[in-house]
Amino acid sequence: MQVTRHEIFQTSLITALAQGVYEDEMTLAELLGHGSFGIGTFNELDGEMVVLGGTCYRLRSDGSVSVPDLSERTPYAVVTNFVPTIRRTITGPLSRQEFSQVVDGLVPSSNYMYALQATGRFEWASARTVERQERPYRPMVEATDGEEVVVRRDFAGTIAGFRTPLYESGISVAGCHAHVINDERSWGGHLVDFVLAEGRVELCLGTDFRLRLPLTEEFGAADLSEDMSEEIKQVEHH
Image (cartoon, rainbow, N blue to C red; front, side, top):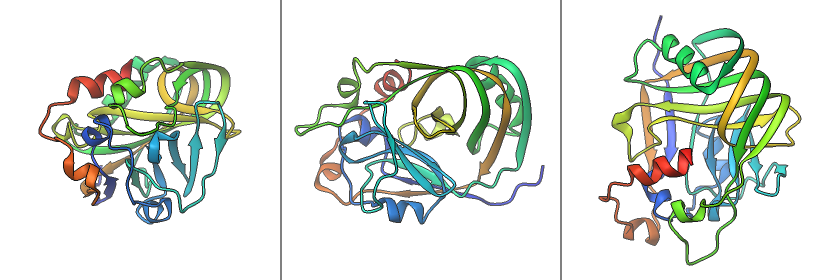
């Protein structure tokens, strides 16, 4: 496989988000200048973010999906210009674990970052969405505790995510971090589990990583030397 250099852009750190740094000055307009595909969240944790084809969607805990104003801000997001070099048509049904094994077999090396997109028909998928937080902000493990997991059955949709090497733990979510949205753009969230009936998986290998850190008082005061890996794992997989 021919590898060309490709940049993945991230604003802030997952450890900062885990500690409750839920605000930054990065506007959606600026974020989309760095990529047309990605995932993240919004200031005050006001919903899950999915960016597809240059359009940013906000997935809220009330089940709504909307396109926010570009002046809105994000405290954490990862984006890239999605140019897939690895593709595979999938005939299922495949569980999340089986899907992960397929992806593992497609990537030439686990030492790179990959933007991952899977489109197709799902037998079902489950997702959850963060609720908007108010000051004083609680750590993310507390803010997301008790989130409702919603199951959607028999729909066409897209998984958007990033597969990140373990050495990036603390900077990004190590492993696979993914969000889901249906084709009608009426439902979605942080992907918990799924069975994919049939579809197509595409991967874009990233060789260059650009990280932007917030110039805010809260970020400057956060204790980022603390190991938050267990808390991040709990937030991702609870």
